[in-house]
Amino acid sequence: MTSFSTILGGGHSALVSFACCALTLSAVAQQPLKTLLVGVDHRSVTSLNGEWHYLVDQPPAKGLYASDGKVRDNGYALNTHPNIDSGPHNEEYDFATAPTLKVPGDWNTQDPTLFRFEGVVWYEHDFNFQPTPNTRTFLHIGAANYKSFVWVNQMRICDHEGGFTPFDCEVTAALKAGSNFGVIAGDSTREVDGIPSVGIDWFNYGGLTRDVSLVTLPTQFIDDYDVHLKREGTFSAANTKTLTGYVHVEGAPEGTPVTLRIPEAGVNTTLKTDREGRASFDLQPNSLALWSPETPKLYKVEFASGQDKLTDDIGFRDIRVDGTRILLNGKPIFLQGANMHAEAPYRTGRACTDEDVKNIFGFLKDLNANFVRLAHYPHDERMERTADREGIMVWSEIPLWQHISFDKPEVYAKATSMLNEMIRRDRNKASVILWSVSNETPNNAVRTQFLTNLANEARKLDSSRLITSALLGPHLKGTEMVQDDPLADALDVVGQNEYIGWYEMRPEDADKITWTLPQKPILISEFGAEAKQGVHGGKDERWAEEQQVNVYEHQFVMINKIPQVRGVVPWVLMDFRSPTRNIPKLQDGFNRKGLVSEDGKKKLAFYLFQTSYKEHSVGKAN
Ligand code: GCB
Image 1 (cartoon, rainbow, N blue to C red):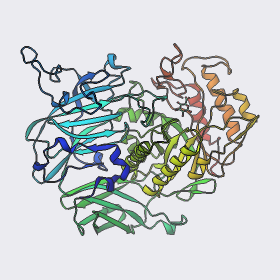
Image 2 (cartoon, protein in one colour; image 1 turned 30 degrees about the horizontal axis):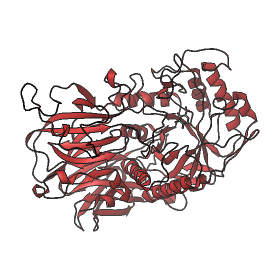
Image 3 (cartoon, protein in one colour; image 1 turned 45 degrees about the horizontal axis):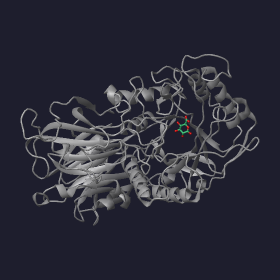
Image 4 (tube, rainbow, N blue to C red; image 1 turned 90 degrees about the horizontal axis):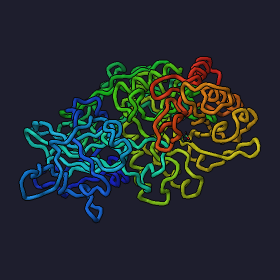
């Protein structure tokens, strides 16, 4: 069997650990597997979404943690029904009569008493299951913030750390015919050595925030694949004739056949797995229509091996840097974008439904955007799927935000795990053009080494995309800005965040500022000002929509003078909840730099961008 560390990289085991000891392994034919199944949303699964009973385990969370900090397998995890009316007295909890939360969904916006709760909440769900011989079943969790501990029928199945990426834990041995139950303890406590660390400018929504399902597969199954346009030294029509990649079949002996078909491109080929279960290929399709924002063409790609089959929708395109230009399919592009947190429009809470994603893309399309930075962590997979279909290019980032413990090897292991999980989930999405390793980190040698290693790790995992990070600073010297952060050397595209006109100086000062920036493509990855929707006033009146417009107008003057700017990404598309935004009546717990309010009302600055993007009046592709 392929070891887990082979599948997801050595660091991953630090994040997802498999609680083998609680299982009766003698009853299990194969070692249970923890993995990350690619394309789960294109498989037929048993959804476990819906109502889950929940119990709050207030700090110090004695239901979950023993006094030595170890996770207890003999507490709430057992889901025993307590003796409430008669002795002997035992643990005082009962899932059966507990209220329910909707999964997927954060707990904060579903129970008013949990609005600001950061800690441990237990989830329990009863479900029916009929095992099928010669299959393996996985519990798929789209994301759970921040740590998860999983039991099925009292057996500890797996743990996971990281709030924004999926994981799959094998439950074959734990399931039985008929009624079953799953118990998941979620701990959203912020930790200094977590990623992110304790200080964040977004709401720390806790819980099972994305889809949960059971995925039943044949004993040998396709768990990972990568199909992309081969990247030649230069881009030309002659150089776009090869698709390259691999299909990985878990549990497959060497020589196992794998069929790869792309009917529309005339591909129908049988590959063979190697000793690792991986079937690599280079193949020549009929001429391909390349994916682009104007023509977001997706092909049906069919994979089959033994009893397993799966069809995905995949686009093919080439993205590269040439000097200070970004080329998509050989053509220089300018990214007209917006930043977005995974905040649900209108209803608030963590975005996780088709409706949330539809609303977000509605704003982007209306803005005439061709690009979105999904800040500051991987979002729901629906976002990339929609971006693929709608022709919106994507920046995807791990939650390595400002200060984290760069000096700790275990934190590096967590970062590589999150990077692995992000890339593995989305490497087949044509819309994703940039992997970001971090946002606004302090400029020092330890940090630079950490992030340079991480950028190289990202390249090793995926050599077909561009690597970026959002840098902060430098501070203004007179009217001059000189960005000399050495981290830029490790990046293909440099993100520059700056808030001239809001956190520093006056809006009109931007007109006179000159920038010295690396000779690489630059994205102005954050800029903006707060405005409360509906507040009107003079152009210098803080919190007025007119002032936000004024800041952006002066920013445009400045940006248009920087030759290597290849994209603008205002902060931020929509107002979002943040624990640090506490000015009553203006912020009320929201960061108000949105072009749209959280209830979907457009501010004046939205229309400024809409027009500028329509007329392509900010920035140049060349
Ligand atoms: C930043 C951060 C972002 C904040 C934003 C702000 O530089 O990258 O996460 O939310 O500024 O509004 O201050």
